[in-house]
Image (cartoon, rainbow, N blue to C red):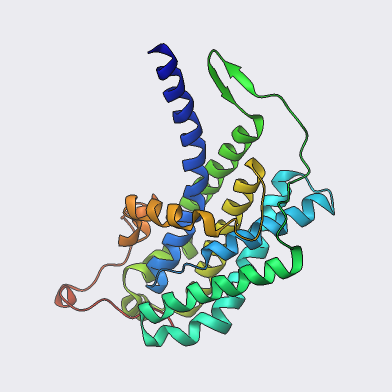
Length: 268
């Protein structure tokens, strides 16, 4: 029995680290859904793009892991904006289902582009070899702790951005009601671009954090997309940005006369 309790405790520690890392791309998925009103499953391929962007700057340019994570955010975010503009934005007027199917197709294309450039081999980051830390029967790797810290910092940064900055409040307003936000002078299309950049950037960070703990290949993001989607649903994220840990206060509300009206259309 003591041995079983030790195993449960070790699994709980590992699960805490893995769940915190998966929460990062889940928040990105949440933000995009809340603003653009469709499940953008291409977060999977952008997680892979971020992982390989971090790999390149870490192994070829010898950047430390924390700086490579920043590069993963920027590259994946920029790729998200470009891919949305070229592929998904023309599909949005056709509805959420059509756009979601287009996002799945985009994922397949991007994964094969990564496969064409980097091949199918597993790749690892240039990290120092360090012993695991041990407290009694529990073990945890230093890289796991670093991943946990980076993920928590990323989530806190998102919370502060959405809760206290003008742009973050505008993003939450668009997520609540696009039409009302536009009447208040908010540029919904600009908010959509920022959301794509931030959401896909977070997916890229999550992809690299997963790779830091194991290894990466062209299917890095695909393997975790169901877990990311489940994390978003369990957190109540599909209901809006509040599911990502953002307080409800400060969002624009619908006029009482429109309380039963259909949800506003997403930015195009």
